[in-house]
Length: 88
Image (cartoon, rainbow, N blue to C red; front, side):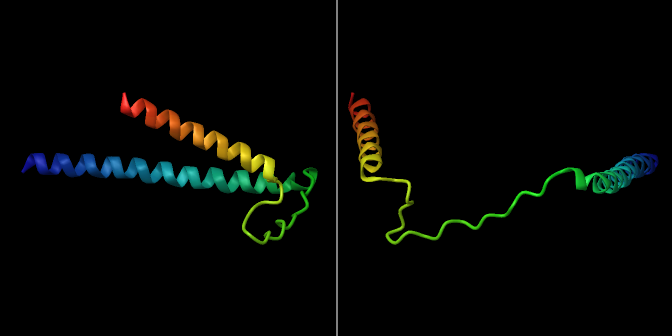
């Protein structure tokens, strides 16, 4: 029976330690938020840019036919190398 009480004491001590740590952490976060809010005016606001409209066909505008050809060549070479290593 004494072991059960010792276990309960240890459990309460551990849970109390965790609870205390979490309370202290919350207080530090709230304090940091209040301090950083006072200095928010020093940082410039970044303008929000809308994403570019989708391109018909699902391809990004930046990819040209030449870039697609390069990507296809790299993928083909990787598949060829994988298959040749796997056969030997």
